[in-house]
Length: 135
Ligand SMILES: [Ca+2]
Ligand SMILES: [Ca+2]
Image (cartoon, rainbow, N blue to C red; front, side, top):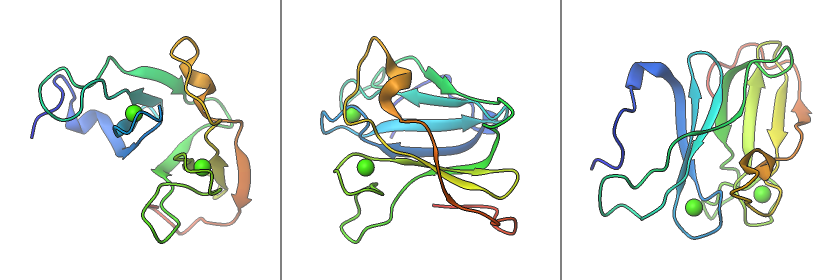
């Protein structure tokens, strides 16, 4: 099923889905080869093209934000992508120094300030040098 166009597969290291806006439709989070994070908001379910909005840049390759890999957390039994149990999907990032950080969902999505959807990262583990993928 095609839900977006001009999404080049070899431009992305990782793509995952989670409902970031709370409207019940899964949105897409993508990490590019430049280690930039983008979210694609789901505007209309899976029924047609143009479902996904233009990507929104939500952070990237600063000295402290350079991820080897990233995941929307999927850590509980009922399949929600939720670390802290608030019902909102959270983001995990594995930094190149082996530090695993979590960006908790702020609890609300503001279209005027999409970068605020994730809180400042919190270190949840260190020494994950041998891990090449998390999910
Ligand atoms: Ca959504
Ligand atoms: Ca959460």
